[in-house]
Image 1 (cartoon, rainbow, N blue to C red):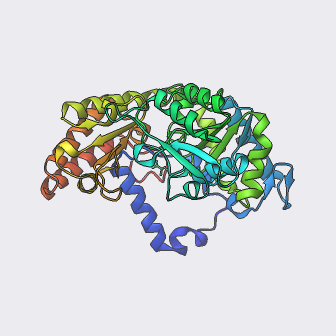
Image 2 (cartoon, helix red, strand yellow):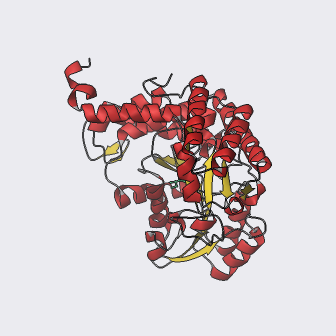
Image 3 (cartoon, rainbow, N blue to C red):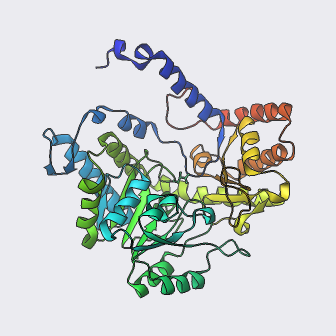
Length: 421
Ligand code: DSN
């Protein structure tokens, strides 16, 4: 029974008001950051539960703390759901997020100084795939591949040649700004040729994979890593999936190698999200994410936007704004004022600096969760074109923000307290 005297509103009005304000902001904004989403009320409830009170270092049935009767059941359910959903022999749901999940792969398979090969961050990779400022680029010998300048796509022959020359011990596929299908089978073949461990990072596309909207790397990868909060629509967390041959090495790498007690409230949220992702509606959701991204890309092209690789196969679109004469950061800030939230991003071969790059990155997971479809994508592209053509026009930004609030009112945001409905 909740005691009203303990409610957040009474304990800390300041934080309570800020959470409500954020909920309203999320409800009234077109959220296009491709790594974000709206979780369900069920996921929110599990995440904001008493499970946050409990320590449980170890794994189900083998813990270093007592009182695990229910925690063990929750983690086991999450693990079994992950295995069933992705068709994996083993799952670990304890990584705190994507970067710790990826670090566990290094700890499980590599020694410091070993060679790792991954996609360069400015070409769409991730920091933890060996980028120079990350521990993975500092403690390991890192070789980076990219996309071809003319196509904006990975040239698999080129990557294979690099792989044969550099002979990495670990090969990564996947990243954070890849608008095209990743050929996991091609990466797996390269890794096999040089005796490398093949790791597929599906953080961005996990929901598309389970929804049949992107090929799965699970049958061909030594290990699959993912966050749980992007297209998969769960709480902020991470997971590892693998054949059972690698189970022990990966489990030991997560605990005690890298982490202490798992975040049980997150584990419960992951379990709920995995249950939701196993429903037929989620399959339709995943397919609609891609249909919406394609519709949005098509309309943006009609408005003269230059899309890296010319379009998208998935949830994500990377726009090079050079031809519009506006840098990514300025565009992102103008759009944010008008109620369209996205992030500025480097584009491959970007002549500008990462903190003020040439591009913006957008995606459709969140707007699709609100039930928006192709007609709304056309409208969003039109708003983006208007704002980017007149980024200093405050009146225009306010008018567009009003139109966006009206649209958002017709597509209520899932989850939360329902204040945006
Ligand atoms: N921060 C994530 C993203 O936005 O893609 C990657 O770590």
